Length: 376
Figure 1 (cartoon, rainbow, N blue to C red):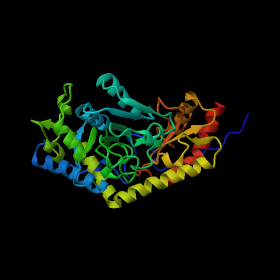
Figure 2 (cartoon, one colour):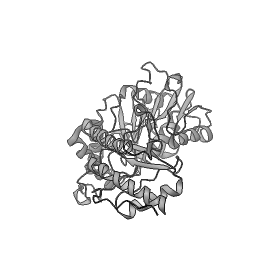
Figure 3 (cartoon, rainbow, N blue to C red):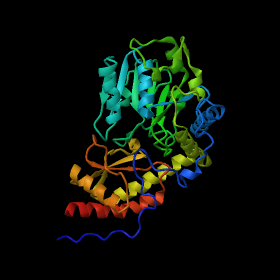
Figure 4 (cartoon, rainbow, N blue to C red):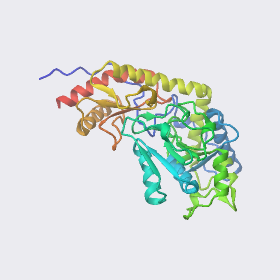
């Protein structure tokens, strides 16, 4: 019988490597949240103030220009992106890019729900489609950072300044981890539960001026549910972008987001990006030192620095499940199995709320779990 490696002596202090909801910021605890808005109406003076403050913090941290509006909407990133699709698509042809499961979800909705017959450009997990072949007379849907494949766009350079269509970026695991050229983005969506380590259920919708123009000049052929309506009497409902949410938000989730944003502000966007970069580099070193580990995204230029997806030599779904269970039982790593639709492998969150020392401590535990799972 092959001798198994001993359990490592050092365990990650915060073994939270889930790709959503992600690790809380360092130093987080529930009793550090400001209770000022709890038990109060979101339409009260204090409720509106806290929602507006949350929006202001997001704008400051993202360095979002005044040309772009930012609003808190229902349904996490999914709800925000669906809202954008249902309210703006149909005015011109659509191209949908898909290289992972969420991009495929937008394709499904465009084809089966909105029935707009988009041009679909696909790539396999781990790959990026040819971004130079996009017809920008179309509206274009894409994921900035493919959370389930570990593949990202290298930058916004592929988006032309003189585009005729709108650029729709599902940026949920990209914002706060990459420097985004907002002049190239007409619509962006994300949720607090990724790089900020916030709670789910709430989405964030960013609209550039060209998106606002579309909303005010175009009425979709299909009916819109109340939670998707951004326009009243042909004009944008500006209150949505001043903290007057469409439906009732969780003020506890808002206060939690404010905590994360204030933590992020103490570091600055560049500081958040640097933390993600350091975590990704530490994990890359672990991979490079092991011949049984690899990156699903082979090209470093398009490899995610947040949701890093790994291949495991000889792995199938059962082996990955066993490894993840072993790591969880030891308190060494939580929620590291790859996404259910992705090739069998591991997925390690390297966003800014994770400490680099915990990534470094993970390497020996991966060795132990791999050897132990194979021997079982």
